[in-house]
Length: 416
Image 1: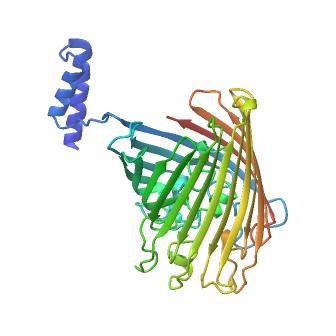
Image 2: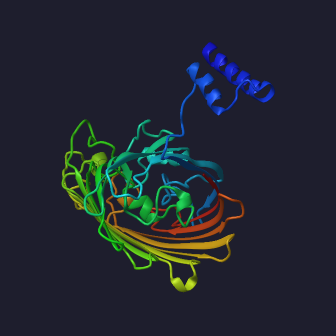
Image 3: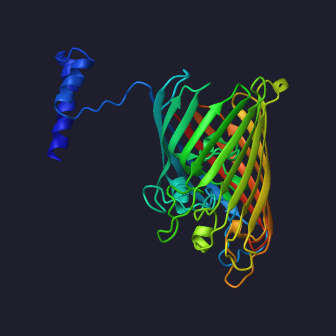
């Protein structure tokens, strides 16, 4: 405490003397005085960029048909926006990065992303994307390490780039960062059908302006390490992606394949039957199109997914779990201030396990769920996004209490 108090007094004294007496001639003198006392930290290293956002919301939910059953929820299909009649600090995100630049030469850098808030609680709990990643602060923690990787480039051909560490998945049209999506709430596919992060090594290569490739080896489905249950070790997974970009850059098509031979960290196996080793296959395809005739005001997007996990060891599931779904997106920017975005989704699970486990003694049954979202965006203030959203979900009564779910949300995000 004494050292802290001394440092504060020193800073105050320097500031006063600078303003009134002119004893400190410039910033270098000020830096030297503080550095001599051991309290100066350099934070503006060349090429390192700090960015982030603050995301807050209010959500109100209600079921339109029937009473909620035991253990059911008004937000059974929503992973992040699951609080009813509540103001939420969704996320305070900080990202620190030193990029590789545009030159094709030997270069290195890093990236680290931290999220604090209710989004972090859900990401750490394993409630999203079937995962079970306790992060660095423990399950249920309000701090989530989203990414932490070293990146480097070898000047091979057009440049071969590598990420080594933890990174977000290339799968899916939507991303973890809500303000980067067309809608405030994350959709069915994002929340129930896809992994969100991987830990391992990923190589990327840009063949030309139209084709770029990615491939790597990772620990598994959302896991930071390969240990899933009781210290048991499981095999690694392969991740491969081909992305095609149209001439002119107004459209792209991404295809990603995930495959693991005995992934104990993959959906269900680690938590239910760690001794049952099977394989997991996932194919994800998504794309964007901004028609040139609309002068950058109109955007269309889509996402499809097919997945299978074998030998789950779950009674009544036939030992295999399959799921597939599709999502359509559209956004129109009416004015620089006002936009409308919509999303329609469908997701099928052959035994309902994608949406929570059945009650004890019940045999899992297949389920089909649907969702529709309409989001109004307002860009009135600089760097501030305000959104008003309505979302409707529908599914079987054993998945959704009352079969129907509604949500109205107000979202405010400041990015820097």
